[in-house]
Image (tube, rainbow, N blue to C red; front, side, top):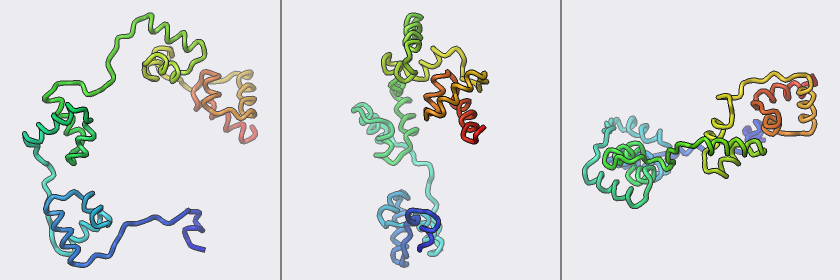
Length: 213
């Protein structure tokens, strides 16, 4: 039996490594010197990225790449044009092989716009009471968020009096109910919601029940 099957692995790791001739190494070095990205070279020659640097060592060639790529006015104009046409900063970054933060900073410096689609809303007391009422009816944070258009995090902040659910100590009656929930096969999350507790508190007791305690 093969070694990787003995270890319980479905298949061995696939290492993209190819034997390279000196001619092929020179082609790789030429593309690297011309400014082609590592990712593009890897895809073009179907090799591991480490073989690019290995080729330069073997051919005794050390090419220093300029890490900072200046942004020209023409590129800024093209970026803004694509942004105004609805393209996201991430997609523009992929198109020009630039980090999306670089694209984002260019857009903000010119337009002074907030690129987040989520608007800041000052929620009224009536709306906060509505969120609490929905929670009292049995809806969880995600369901309330879908019904009201708020984020689940905001719903939790409004409806939960404590900033976070700390570890809870259960009394004897609660522990018996926890044991019943464990026997019924309820999940940690479902049980935690039932007791308004953190899942870590429930898991502590479920682990005890598993050990027969």
